[in-house]
Image (tube, rainbow, N blue to C red; front, side, top):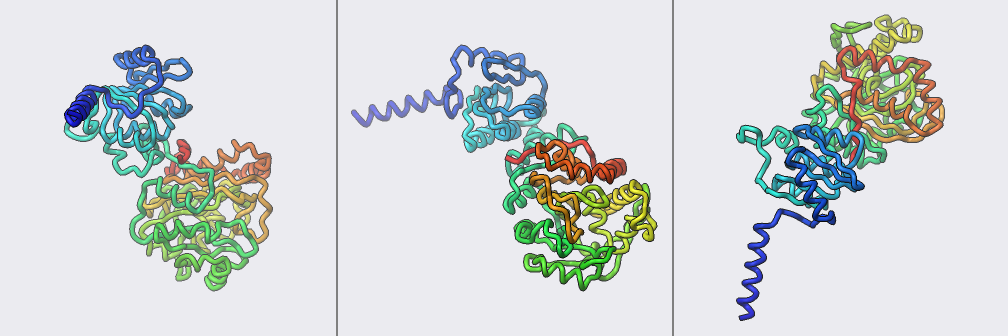
Length: 450
């Protein structure tokens, strides 16, 4: 009899479960309020309830979620959504939602919400969210299928909804682990033999990105550290001396190192160039299938600031090519060229390298130890502004623009000297010229990694 009684209870529970809305934990909303909010989904696509205030949206697709995330998080809100698939679930995870109700929810979305401890309820559960013709996945579900996390998914969705806006990822925590993490978030596997372009640092200086900091990232992409010789007197103007400096700084201990102009240079065309029509780069560039441009963002005594655009232009140029860019096509004017012409020549060089790699290139800027002087200075001024973080993008224009904007928006009073250096050298003009050439866009969305 006891056995029969237990069986009946179990059967009763199973039958009850089949007729209940899907849920992980019931919301603490009063039943009448919840009923009212669910009712609103008959005429709205999204309803958000917070602090007894109701906001209803009628936009389609994921527009209302993206618009809300532009200014807010979902923390402390009760969200009532028409349809929740994996794409929407990722946005709720990124926005730190506490509770989500859906008229219709997909099983993969439920798994994501459960995994991230977000309470949910739903009227209907489906296998997946399909497209309008029911012939396959919804385009947004397909878009984020391989997203590694909510941050990457958010970036993919935002870019699809705003194709004229570049995505820049940001983390304020400067660690080797986060350097690798932000690269992964880009969701871009660099193919073939990967060149990692960084600044090896003029001996005497100490602000350049340290080998132990970049090692894990260089290992992750299985990259070769590449550099080119300088066009000025110092410890890096010949291959022999440059290699000695690289060994002193320890880069040879973490990866293979290649001085790309050790055997000469090749020409890259810049037909649309404002100042130069040819860019001279190290001949070994042709040995690489893709490039990771890893830059230390800081001031610069000639360019105003150095970031992705400087590393891509002056950094990849041969020794002669550096003088050619500095002189805007007249290398003998390396130190006397009109400032804006020099900055435009850098943008021209950027255009040529971007065209050469044809999308097989990506960029990371590290905003730490930001002196007003470049890492090519053997006695740089002491940094006055505090560290800001790591930023990454496939767009070097958006990336440098975002870094400059973060300097200006910083609450650190030490920013004054760096801003002065940027402005007195009209540094932003490189960004302006590169954008005009189609290297990238100054319009961007900064997405903080969570």
